[in-house]
Length: 329
Ligand SMILES: [Zn+2]
Image 1: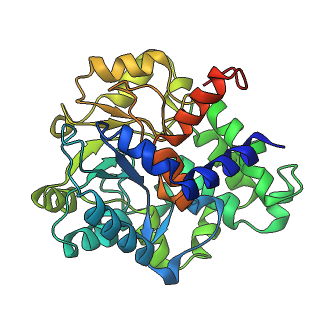
Image 2: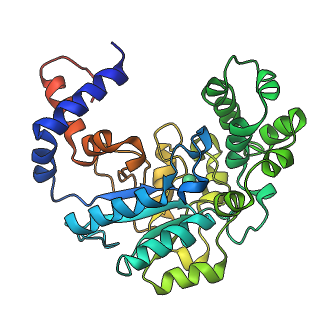
């Protein structure tokens, strides 16, 4: 049985037996931060690799009501009883759609982590390199996908594009974009998508819009300039990418991609040296390092979400380790 399948079974058992709830109670002293990406109206939702972390408007409202009624919502990292809501990247949908819902649910605060390359960007053709690659692979015609040397579209991202993108550190992914553009123009990909989708999903919030969010109690925070996996870059370049604009100094920071494959030990040290209040990973972590704090995504489904959010996953792994069943926690 695959590791993924075992994990899923453990999550289901933990959810329906109430073990999740016990773990959540035992770890009640830990601040929980929820991670969202884009929030789109139902009519613009797309099921593709570019939108695996996108939440529909109705679903987002349901989840926010759940967090509000069960825990309360606060950006204060010391207020451990309430959860924090965070958004990554700084796209239009986050300020417009999610922002409107947070306001209508009672002027709720959130953290938004903006990549410099998205700030004030009105041109979808110049959106983040990773989004160009993701949208290309999700929407280019089958003949174009076949030229990547894979059998299916699903294989293209994990097997070819993501490894190649990570390796393109000198150009931070622009080389991969140029290569794909030569196979099938990105401009045609954009032209094939609904205009409102393109605007919400690929263009950025303006400084005025971010100011308006600040006035509603949001923390507007830094998410690097180019949104490239930091660990792949030389240390000096990591530092340049991570150095925030003045107005985002001393606030929380979120690493792009935020897992151990994209965040190195030196990256974590730099986040501390640069004076950020805390720094967030994009996945649950077992350790409580203030510069690599867990975040939880509801997009992985309710059962997996609670498995991670409650801390049940690490509790079970610790038990299995103690029994000698798994070696690594
Ligand atoms: Zn991001």
